[in-house]
Length: 477
Ligand code: SF4
Ligand code: SF4
Image 1 (cartoon, rainbow, N blue to C red):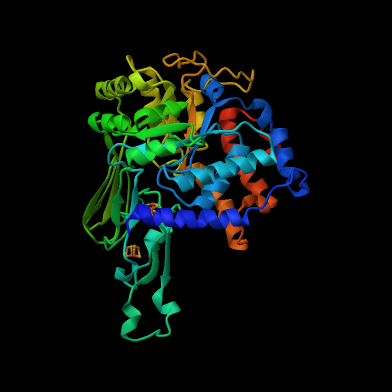
Image 2: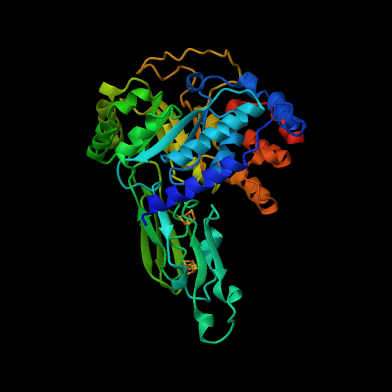
């Protein structure tokens, strides 16, 4: 069975059971009153605006569920929490079941507290890309005495391993050397790559894939998809043109097309630490890790740093000229500073801001909003403010003017149109979801308002850095 078939079967099954279990929220539910009160006192509804106005003002916020993350239960709950927190867009995998889960979360949030509906964006790739891959290994092939560092390092709880001996009737003898049970939970793996170099026995394979253009076009034609994001290496434009042509007239259904570009490669050794005694070199797109035999034995982690040269701007202009004849909506450039690293810390956001700073200052770049991603976290707005790229304010005129012309997208009051949060946003709310799921078998977070309230405080603290919410209501509780 192919990965995509397996994922679809899993997702359909989960959504079906989720629908059966769904609890209709009554508007007078007292248990959810604290959630409504928090949304109101923080000022989410008074500050929120249409996604277009947010782009113009520079306080657009996008939640990235992950181009390969397909756990529909978590995606539904993340969408609910972040809609309540006031995001403008929710970006997800281009799978029908995932899009349905996002929309279900949005509808549940709007039922709790009347808020503007965020746009739903689907992410696709035109070629091999870090965001479109999965880890895979055979747990039976793992040495029984392995300390399972892969499981520890995974930020998505996507590796589940049980000792065969602990579940087997036979605990001793020859059978005690067999491997583990479990393995990679495919729907939760989003391809971050952290487990690949950590395995001392090189057991983990990388499975890459490219989203099909025809299937994407059909998904776009649904009335619950508003935006498309294309991940591209920008090294060559022929795969980009092939994908764009394959989408055909589905483009006219969109309100926004985003193109995600990463910085050109400029490597620097950032850190080193002890490594297992195995020699290997793994290239993970822009991130390389080398294990070198000792003595002493070290890992050398070599990561890319932003380096905007003429080639990037030339590629962006080429892609824009491919899109322009059929681009009847807004366009945005997602600056993927340090892909899938936002939950690491301040260092990750520095690389992301440096990339944005160089691109914002570049001459001759094509039309389109600029939005940060890749390495974004709680430190990002602080960093953007220091370099003068974040200039929005909390004032809202509630403009509903969605007739912004293509090509008139760079507003004078915001050098950066907004910020997208992925791994970090999922981590802070994911902790609450994990706790809830460990105590209850429930799949809908609104069934447990105390958990929803806690998750919402986390989401508000992050989204509020961009939206300039009053932090006192959720910091004091
Ligand atoms: S690639 Fe990342 S998300 Fe996937 S299993 Fe490995 S560590 Fe977990
Ligand atoms: S680290 Fe490697 S050998 Fe150990 S359990 Fe994970 S995949 Fe298997």
